[in-house]
Amino acid sequence: MHFRMKWLTGLLFLLVSSFNSLLAADNIPAAHLIADQIKQGLENQEDKYISALISGIEDQEKGIILSQDELGAYSLYVEKQRTFLAQKNLREAESWMAHLQSNEDVNSIIPLKLAYTLVKKGNGALLTRECGRVSVNYTIKKLRDHFPETAEKEKELDLTEIIPGLAHGMLSMHEGEIRTIYIHPELAYRTNNFDPNIALEATVELLQVFPTSVEIPSLREIPHFESPEVTQDELDRLQQTNHYVLGWKLWDHLRWGYKLFTKEDLISSLKKEPLQIAHSEYREEINKIHWKIYHQRIEDAYTTADIYFSHLPCQSDIKCLIPGYLYCKAQRLRETPVNKTFFRARTIVKDRESKILRKEQLETIKLDEAITGLKEGLPYLFPQESATLFIHPKLAYQNVDGPLGDTLLVIDIEVD
Image 1: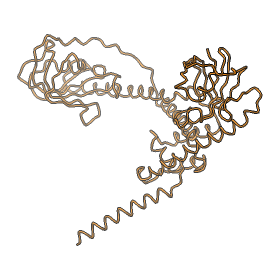
Image 2: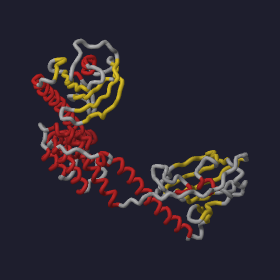
Image 3: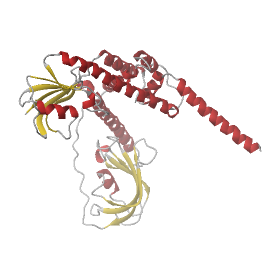
Image 4: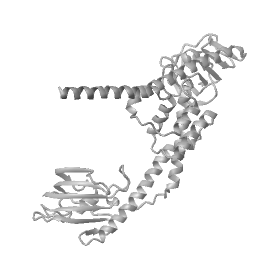
């Protein structure tokens, strides 16, 4: 009976806690939920990065267009961050190798590049350069790591196919011997792996040496390439630019949530402390908010398109092809559409405010695969004459994600 009461009490507590969490999520302002979701996705939440994010939101609201440098900020940041990490790892590797060299228990193979300590002697066959295959137990750790990066038992290795530091660090081992090998990044993966210029520590037990005709190649001089120095200040500036661009792009989507919150609401929430409840507890509420924002954007896009197209017939140089949905500005149009299945044309796709959505390109447009606006408009155009098609979203990329989706398209076009 006592156990049953404890079980019921525990169940009641869980139900009440779950209900309170859901209730809490329902009562949290939408701006605070969205701000918290944004913060959880940030690599760094320091004030200077939040300020950069907010600046991006404000500039997007003002209609400021991102420069090409800003658009490429993330790729440049990732590249510079990797270079910075490679520099840091290399300094640590060289300091580590220098410290090892001062240890009398460490045997140096190549000064400051390759060394080992003997863990256990072996009495079996000797591993020489003429022996290209072995069976080993081994573990490999990266510098600073407490747990192995990789480990194998009774693994057969072709010593011509593994990193040179490991192959040459094993030379002169006897079967049964165990040694720990210390490998400088120049004799390991250099900058080619996920953790660039990382030093390695390999503990190897040599089980068996196999006679083979393959010989381990000599260590050749490895060319050293100097990469431009990346400072912490430079990395910080790039990260701030990256947060600015992120804010700009976020508001390009979130601005359609104007019925749920204002820009000021969101900025105020971004400056507050994060919520104390787990993200999973209010994920459903956040999904509802984004669903409402998405559909508000679609609704506004179609309403704006309807208003825009209602004024086009008033312009004398614009001809109607489908009332309310498709118009064309051209010197002349065919009286009847030409019967063709495809057209070769040069196009530039813009929105109603002349923002370029797709750069100029020469393309072959197959009418059976084209959007309705092109399918209906192209056959009226004369070759070698410039024209502009105005296409309602219903005749364009309806219910499609991306910059062209559910958007009024203005296409500058010239048919070959």
